[in-house]
Length: 301
Image 1 (cartoon, helix red, strand yellow):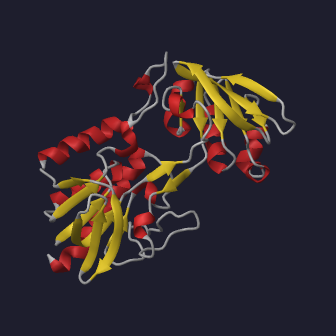
Image 2: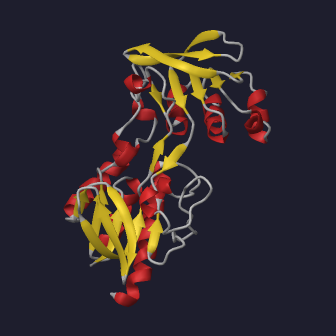
Image 3: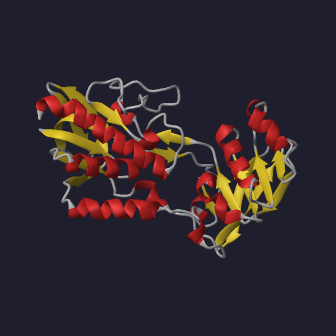
């Protein structure tokens, strides 16, 4: 039986694994890949990436330390976690079964997509899902944000501080009836397209335009230097069904120590009800969860 199994190989999971191995815990990392969403990054035809801190650069350092410390890992997706005497049983998609005294769940979240023609073709080629990460690249540029809720408003506000123009497609009335919404409505460089939906994204090598349809059926094509789909994320929590408390959106509830409602299960990163979906936030969450797991395990070590 392992002392600790870390589920997920993104920023939170890698950090948790390294902190745990430094504490000399008997550890296994289980993940479908190493790096998570940081393996993907926005590419643009004529903008320099040096203006942003790339999450991949941070995670690569943790990957190298993982190899240096000879951390045991199993590359497979997790199908189910079940409570057993003395801890938990983790079952993986390739038929593996692993017993552990404790868990750090860092399985991340999946971006919600538009599901329109062109989206898959241009994904991360002028089109991506995190304006908060890439806003510094769009000084004096034209941008489009697609989404109805608070995340879309936050992303539009971030871009509006630097971009020449921000077109916000599909904001809901309820989201705009807020201090942030009022600020955006009054911004001179923000254009609102209420009750519009995107029907197509296009470009030539890189995504540089979207086609939108209004409530009256009229269609319009809008050009931009960067396009951001900000419809939120869905947490990867199916394997935890019935084990831990989730919030109304399905994210794992954690306290300030990264503890869940189940003894011996901790969580970190985008899978939790954390403040922001950012690499450095996930790194901090992973360290905290691992240290909390160590404190939990101390009486048994």
